[in-house]
Length: 436
Image (tube, rainbow, N blue to C red; front, side, top):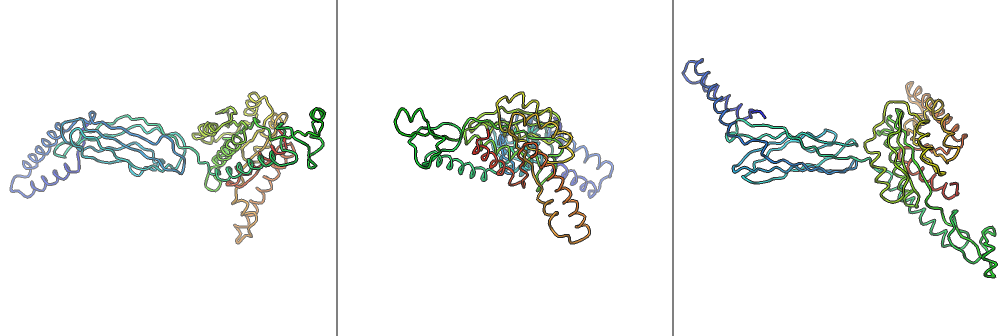
């Protein structure tokens, strides 16, 4: 705790200097007298100021905010003394939280409490823990203030946005209606899981006739099926250096997170279990496959503070961890970048480890700007060079996707705002074909 001069002290000192210059006194003695008077006033005011450690300050933050959403911070300041005090507070809030203000001043009557608030507009996801709050209490003359730093660690999480929520929910609703229609319509049901026995109709496939039930009842009986539930989906999210690049103003890893959340929501809605593995040179988080609405929250919790690392991704290590944990045949969705130089040396040699037992979808974000450059007629020499480079990149990307398909993986290379929706479509198609 230390004294701090206020703006009023500066003004008073300036006035004393003017008086010393104007009055007909000896300048040295007048200057000394003015300095002594200013120091005396400062000492008296500092001694009379309330101790900032007794002033109560409490901070409340919105604990969880979605990136692009709004939060709030509240400060409650309490004056436990028997006299009126003027308090100034400065908070240590990260600039990326987008606080409307971080400083304020209050005049508190004896024994009173007042609350100040401001809005938060975070521009970066992750975990934030604002700590220090500086409390300054002015003396009764307003010339000096006593200041102390207080520790008020308050955690706050900024979650990744679920940008594709509307698209995914529309597809979920359509899939659920289709399943209901298949189960109630005359004719064969869809899926591989037994549903009910019913009388045979001319639209039924004779392969679905239950001959034992037919013999017991004396009339043709068929089995109907529904889409199998409790299947397993596991998302493997690459967090290496290729995922740090921006596409449409957003890092690739952010679009991959959106796709992971979309698949988790879709799998949970259809009764399947979905999990997550995040990795780069090492495996970071493993969220075991589970069903239910709460699984989306668990997956989001594993993603919100994930930052891409500028290292090569160890696909073999991540796949080994996955195979060791997932014994049952599952749908594995690898979210990565189709960079030829990385694929040929690391991913392609490791991919058979997954394909030997599981179905694999490789999802990647295609840059719309590159596609535009590759097709738009060039307007200058620079444009021609850019078109050539874009075409070369597109060709390399298509070649990598072709190699993956040849090995047996399904490849979804989509625009950033379509990746989640197209991956959900691919997942639904696999379920409809009973490939799991």
